[in-house]
Amino acid sequence: SEEIRKLQEDLKYMQGFLASVEKKLNNPRFLENASAQVIENERKKQADAQNKIVVLQERLKQLQ
Image 1 (tube, rainbow, N blue to C red):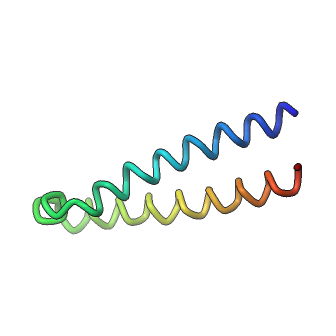
Image 2: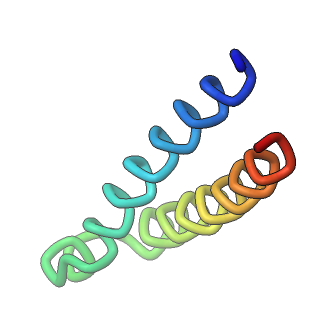
């Protein structure tokens, strides 16, 4: 259905977004050079993305 397709698109986007945030957080140079505030913001983005992914996966399970 259209809703499933949209959820799958959103899930794919969020997984890519999470991967890019985690790449930054796993980069020692980023951690050395970024301010504590920037690192905290990236960690919040990471947590938000992880939560959204769980919600999207649950919703997809319900629809399939």
